[in-house]
Amino acid sequence: MYKSRLAVRKYVISSALVASMAFSPVLSEGVFAKADSEDIEQNDSSSSSETAVLDKGDRGQDVSELQTELESLGYYTYNLDGIFGQITEDAVEDYQADQGLTVDGEAGPEVMAALSSTSTDTGATETSSDDTPNESVSQSEVVSIANSLIGTPYVWGGTSPDGFDSSGFIQYVFNEAGVDLSRTERDMWKYDGTQVDSPSIGDVVFFEGTYDVEGASHSGIYIGDNKIIHAGSDGVEVSDLSYDFWQDHYLGVKSFK
Image (cartoon, rainbow, N blue to C red):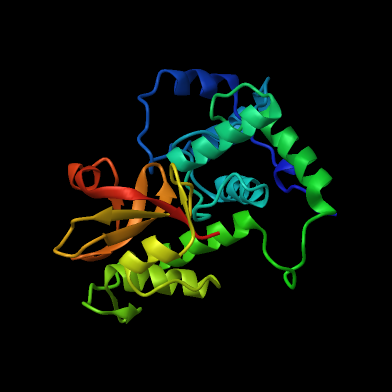
């Protein structure tokens, strides 16, 4: 029986510390506050309230465990990086909506309790490592493989971690995840997968007219938060779909689940 690790974690924050945090500047993602250890020890003895809340800007093992819980339920399909950013917040909000909880993007006591209950209820149906992975694990694997290749140089005709062109990158990632695709974007768009109206994490976004070729000419793997990982002229990198270039050359989305 699968048992949530989050259900047994506790965070002790004194009323005084909470009050001081309330008037502190909002921290950007990737930055988190640390309290002096001596102050925490003093406050522990006089604390009059306890709370357990993870929200945007937090980092560490607790966030990694939250992401792991959400991943096991299919809500989080990005890297387990221990960073509570926009993708993690979106996953929490989706889970809250499905569970009928207040949708605020914060992983508080209600969310922790619900995750514990949900994980326990679904534990008996989880497959072993020898079974065929479910859809969410497959899509998570695609993103994980793509992310591990960030920084690989661009090589015309490249199909390996020594260097990729745009379609070679897509083909390699999906092949590693157990999905065979055509060699070129044009053929992927014509023959592989299923066209969908909007991208989900792990889908492939296609573009046309990025150079002088008929049909699909470039592509990237959607990783959420309106971003893709693709092999561009500077190598494998993350790019934002809101850029005018992508909007001007957008062709569509395909799912290769």
